[in-house]
Image 1 (cartoon, rainbow, N blue to C red):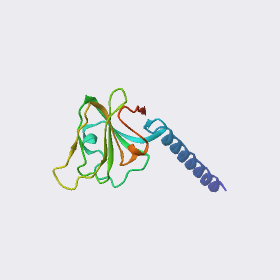
Image 2: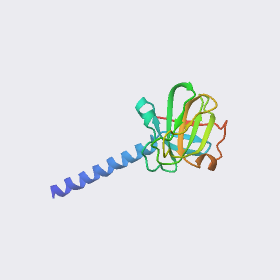
Image 3: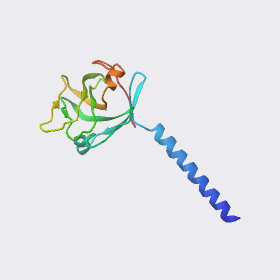
Image 4: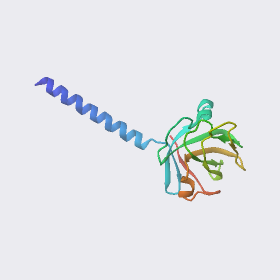
Length: 149
């Protein structure tokens, strides 16, 4: 009888732990929002992460993206070397306004790879699936809201 109680107690503890982990991960995600359109984002800060980005990824969830945060505003170039999925690349300034969008950037199939450069300085760059920017009506000057942990 005691072993059954221990078993059920162990199962109950595991269930509570899984529920706690699920709730924590759902409420503590990094998000970037354009009006009511929000995306869960991976935040990239280190040099190594900055240079790798979404390289070699075979897919990206529809409401997901990667947010690059740079140390200062500048003209940051992006390319699609070793990137397997088409992307919209969105440059955002320190006022959290879109300053440039590269729609439908295609994977680079042979070198030299094309480099995309904004017309204005940016502090952040967001990569999302191709077509998203047009689908939700993003344009130069659109405001961005960050919810970063």
